[in-house]
Image (cartoon, rainbow, N blue to C red; front, side, top):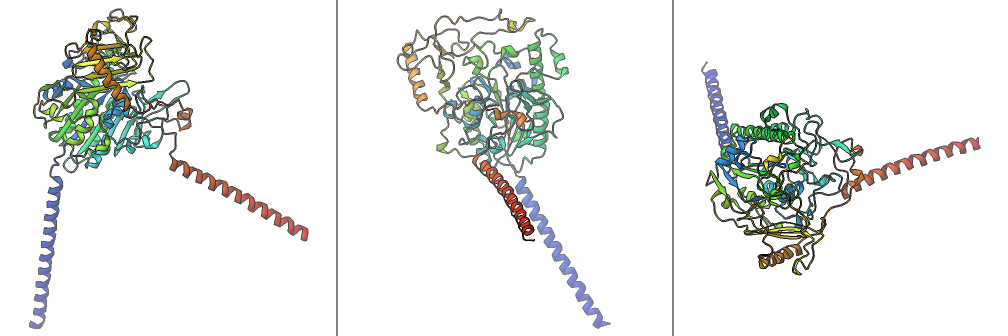
Amino acid sequence: MFILWVPVSLFLSFIISQTWSVQMSWDNWNADLRNRGNEFDKPSSQPHIVFILVDDQGFRDVGYHGSEIKTPTLDRLAAQGVKLENYYVQPLCSPSRSQLMTGRYQIHTGLQHSIIRATQPNCLPLENVTLPQKLKQAGYSTHMVGKWHLGFYKRGCLPTQRGFDTFFGSLLGSGDYYSHYKCEGPGMCGYDLYEGEEAAWEQDRGLYSTVMFTRKAISILANHNPRRQPLFLYLAYQAVHSPLQVPARYLERYKGIPNLHRRKYAAMVSCLDEAIHNLTLALKRYGYYDNTVIVYSSDNGGQPLAGGSNWPLRGSKATYWEGGIRAVGFVHSPLLVNKGTKCRSLVHITDWFPTLVTLGEGTLDEDLSLDGYDVWEAISEGRPSPRQDILHNIDPIYIKAKNGSWKAGYGLWNTAIRAALRVGHWKLLTGVPGYSDWVPPQTFSNQRLTNRYHNERVRWDRGNSIWLFNITADPYERVDLSQRYPHIVKKMLIRLAQYNKTAVPVRYPAKDLRSNPQYNGGVWGPWYKDEREEQEEDERYNNLFTNHLGKRRWKKKSKNRKLKRKVEE
């Protein structure tokens, strides 16, 4: 018995010791895993960044600027953050978006003129480093939802090729809010909703785009761990750009507005406000909010003919008057030092590139040749802005002013050319700045918007091709000081000429019929092929051609052999 008992006890003790050893190793492994998990779950010092860009929202079309449109969410976020009350963008969609993405003026990217049309072989030049690319280098997960409008004629132009990990949205400048179709003329209609680099047929439920884009943004937040990796979300709404479409329940709030355009527009803004409320709740629900910077911006001024209002500013979208370029904007974040304040320092849309890259602990290389400035301390702490001037643009191919000349520009500048420059308090305009009326609220009566009886009209037969305003003293551009201060005009013309020396040629190619969606399965999408794709396609064609010839030769030889055999027989 003893002989048997000893080995058994030894065996049991061995088993117990080994089991204990394994258990200890398992516990150690679990503890190590927990420690690693804790390391992963440590919040990053890099803030999450949510940039909300809305389309065609007028300066007055927010509650805190005195609008009749109800925007409780925007009002609250702005009141608890920092309102940007000296904030400028570009007068049109593509120019503002290009400057946001690159931190560079239009004259330095070749996009000085108009917008990127759906039928043009044009896009944001590929040699320009983009904001999402820089944030991605800094360790960010980068996502875009909404309107791109920076070109798509070849695959390299698409958002997922320009720094975004994911993209869900539209490539064009506008379209139907429900069907997501867009026509660029007779026989040029197509579908415009993308998931990544392919048409999003399967994801399309016919939802109103403001609702659809918000749900997608919230889904991105829900599926990302905010403690493991910083997030950059660029949410570029289609709203409130025409066509004026909105769910009926929002229209009911504005029965008191007699003008149908204004009523629909107001309802669209309210829907947008509700969407941002839902987005903000999601930021809190999924653990982002306390370490998030939210930037809100319109891409240009409102269009009165489509229900927008820039009152009391002069002009509208597509003009270089204040109503076209002075935008609604604010920053909301628990990370702000001075909350509940107004920033009256000069801020421009190009400034977001260096500001957000620096905030995200990225690097800014000298070869980027940025026109933007890091304005975070000016916004967050109320310090002076490093920005002292803004080149609003120089457009050498826009309609020339009939009365413009080198003589009118003191031999320093041809005032027939459309240009606008801000230096300190002063603003200079030359050429044809665009529609220049002041459109007061009473314009939105039950009359047609094309009837401008209520507008303060400006006669264009005065022969002006140059204007000077002190924007600080006269933000509504009512008193032209160009004759009173010629020395200021000359200094600014010299500065304009200096900027013009750095301009690159304008990129504005002619319409390409190959862009027609009917050649692309009914979808707006890339139609150009880069050199690699063309080479691959040529190789495929050559292989097919060679194989086809080979088969024909083999058949011919085979036939000749048969004939030869028959002759021999």
